Image (cartoon, rainbow, N blue to C red; front, side):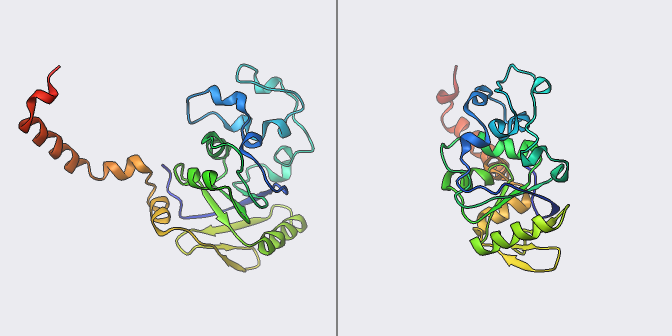
Length: 213
């Protein structure tokens, strides 16, 4: 898992509340069992003018010119700015995978659905919850400044605006530590690899019948 420490990047505005996981990655793309390749289908129903599926080449589809991620001003954005209850709906992990695969490292909103919030940390993706007033001020600043960038400093737990304003956010210390070190559950487990191998060797010696074919 990629570590997350400090990211300074362009911001894309998605000025909608209650963005649900079916909007983030529609159900027809959940047939894929990979964790990659979902980026082209992020916000699929909003991003394209015609319907899509895994077997339809993205290059053959018509982009919606009115959708924010299709606009040149927000190309290469790595931070998404949205409104309250982001990630509501079903529990699909694919929603986080699609955001990450597209190139986003973080999403800032005033609140998140619990399952989406929890899934984010398993992919090295950072959900930042700020107050509704602060989020509103960021939307206004972004609208007035093409190429608007924010810095997210995870060790210090602050979002820093171009003007120098610092907005603190809360995060569980254990999750923060895992993100900064780039450790998911598998990575955490492998840190105890020597102890695990020693235990397995001891059990094999103590109860060899458990390991016979």
